[in-house]
Length: 482
Image 1 (cartoon, helix red, strand yellow):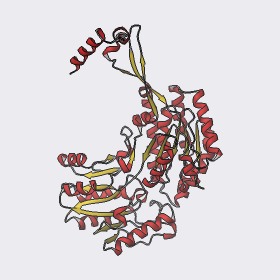
Image 2 (image 1 turned 180 degrees about the horizontal axis):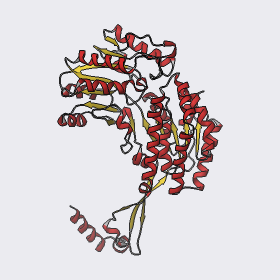
Image 3 (image 1 turned 180 degrees about the vertical axis):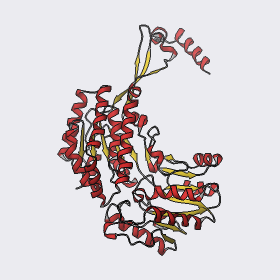
Image 4 (image 1 turned 30 degrees about the horizontal axis):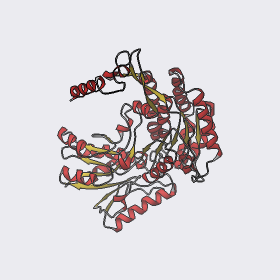
């Protein structure tokens, strides 16, 4: 938590950012290690903030989206976060306990080794718009469990939620513990340039690179949770009806605007019509009216236009496009977009090159498992991978041959909701982990502490001049090690 040398070429830092950082750092130095009871109290306050203001928070997110399914907000944001907080409270005492480590033979007798998890200090959190409660409060659960303080910058697309959190948060936490900030006006780069003790960013790979470069100005360690084109593959043994039901549930959740969502799917050759038929039936059953409130809108006009342009690009380049709600005319003015399947893809299509982040599902066919592994491994490593198969050998093949941040077998998305599993990407899909114990570790300094006993073998046997006893003993110890 020492002051760092400023980079005078960096962007101007807003006064409110610097003042808050200085205030939180001073509070860290005054109270460097919150007790177990204090940390539990902070976690309970996080839960209270969510529960006490549930209706207002749901409404604010819905206003930011234009329409956000209330159930999806409650399930994907509130339920998951409250479970994460409960998990942290339940396990915190165990996580905080110092770990005993073995002593090197030369340091006997009486020495001891311990690893003590200690707070890092002030953690910065940069939150995307797609799950703004989940992706701010889940990290906060780990940050507070580890005994830190936090500055949280919301997305420019979460303006109503940011204003609400800025207004209500001081009733639950002093600003020396937690403060929320809105975005806009180019403040993002300035925030990521602050000399935090750790910085967590969730968002696109392009922005993640910029965030990492800004953090490097002050050698701030970063955890990056990015995205990418997460694939699914349906094995030849797996029932296509079940696969379609589970894949489309994941794809349609939040209208596909999830960093871990299924970006495209592989199905066996000859199964195209069967898969399409199931998808048409499912959308008709689950969303008989895309405008009834259960179906989430695209976040803004730019994103809506981008998705429509990607469909136009695919159509112009020879793709076959299936509208899964052919009898409906969604309200384009409210950015309600019908779900689509896209077949006959080529590598020069936008849908093949960029993360989709919307209700468009490219479908590829394959002849062998090697075809799937070869294609996926030829792309950037994805944040998630979804094999659908009951064949244990095929499951092992895909897990061992296709690298990704996380895996759900025979389901979409749900590895992310398992609180005893770490969450994080690999390579272009991110670096570092959090959730549960891994989150506690990420936001802690696992500090090694060696304590020498009354006698010291080093002092007794390895003092110069080294010729003679010291050298003979060293040669003996080396021979014993080989």
